[in-house]
Length: 147
Length: 147
DNA sequence: GTGCGTGCAAATTCTTTGCAATGCA
DNA sequence: TGCATTGCAAAGAATTTGCACGCAC
Image (tube, rainbow over all chains, first blue to last red; front, side, top):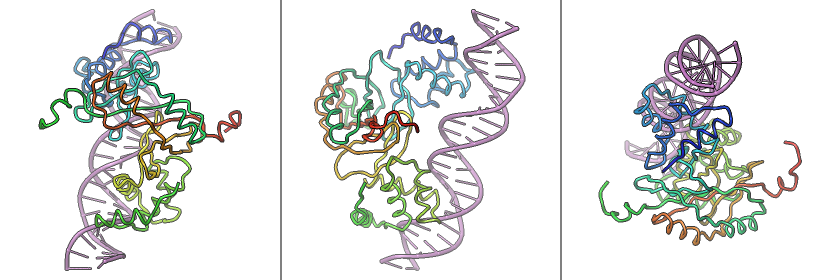
């Protein structure tokens, strides 16, 4: 999934922050992963291109990059706290339950669902957090393939 | 939120397991909480009615009770791994971002959203994990109240 | 007696914090 | 010089595991 490094660098600069080699490595590691990745996975992957990278930095960077909207946290029934590159718009992630590959989708009309929930609970709904899972096209095609 | 202890006891019995005093305490603690609760919170609450309860047991019990469908895990942007009593039907949770109170809603017509996601990503969607947050009726009414 | 269930303590894993050193502007 | 950024080591928190005892059937 693409990430516009220049744009991110700009966002950071606007806050007086920099896109360092370490941050870049973290960013690339998440961007190149075909699935959502945990801090530890990012650490391993990013180290390959920046061996002196410390785990502390990974945590700090993931936090920072989420904050500025370059990355997004995802959760799921079986994994908490993993990261994916954030698309441009408000979007949701779809995780393949077999290979963990992640895609994003943006057509998301939750109006009706949100309205129904509000009606039923009396809450004023301000945010929704939706995550779908299933089989990606590849896994779906080869459902009978052994792991 | 109500939980049918007899039914749960039955489900456990069918597996050769029992609803012990400790498990009962955990169950009640979650059921009586007005919001989603973390393992540690459950531990504290359940201890009041079962002082000899160990933290280990809480973890094991939460796991077990989720497995048999008596409890449900919830996640959110700012808290991972909390538990709420599971309603009878497939349902979703709505969390109040101010007081953490949780409600469940069951009218959930995700057909359209799921179909759109499938179309856009090529995934075969088998599960959806939706969580809403906002302000519950009480917090919404007193938005200007200090914490 | 058999096996589930338990608490305790220890081990592990994950995450955060403190701090001195580095490096860019 | 000034401040962001870093790695390391230590601290801390959360969770899991090993194990022997207790208890229900």
